Length: 180
Image (tube, rainbow, N blue to C red; front, top):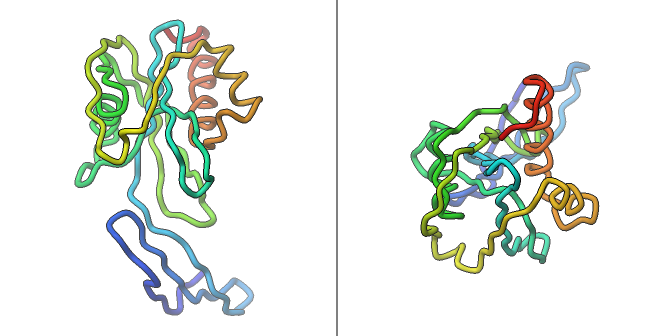
């Protein structure tokens, strides 16, 4: 596709909506709308037996959702540094070891952002450092069986968390053993 022209429809500090006119391979022009958003990190906190998840209200879905901790940090582009900070902020956990498992693009047809999936092990607990908008956040430890049941039952609907778990399973398969 070739971009013929484009415009910014809306922008705030978190998200930009663009609308571009593009020329398809057959020469036809069409409109393509997409979101520009900062890249992020998703952290899989694993203590060798359990995962640590966070639950928060997700306004677009109008429900609370369990998911792995994660997010973007303004001005920070190193995904491991972002993972370390998000882990500490949302859960209070500190990781002795962070391992990058791969990247995901949660909405490649509508958004530019990528997420880097990071496995956090050798965990120690401390106080969380949540932002004011995260004060209603809950967190808890869940066994692998509980985590998988939560996916099956719809308690975990966050595609990024499900994709992160898939990368963890591939990591375990490549290493020949479960992490921990």
